Image (cartoon, rainbow, N blue to C red; front, side, top):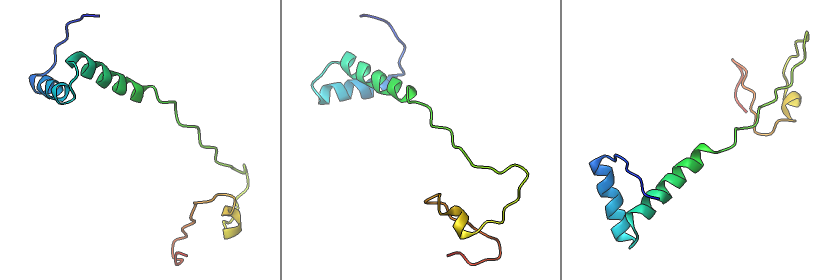
Length: 82
């Protein structure tokens, strides 16, 4: 399909250079670039993080409380880090 677009001179020069280096057409370089860009916009949303809570209860944290969460480090002010 033919269309007309305005592309900054420097960007067009880079695209033409790339097309020449890869022995392909400018249209193919532009189509591949646009397809790659659009694919980044179509990423699925990140899953929601569920944080367990205990309404009405204050729980003093201990090492035992965090063993269910690998990779989580408990930092307590005034205590040395382990």
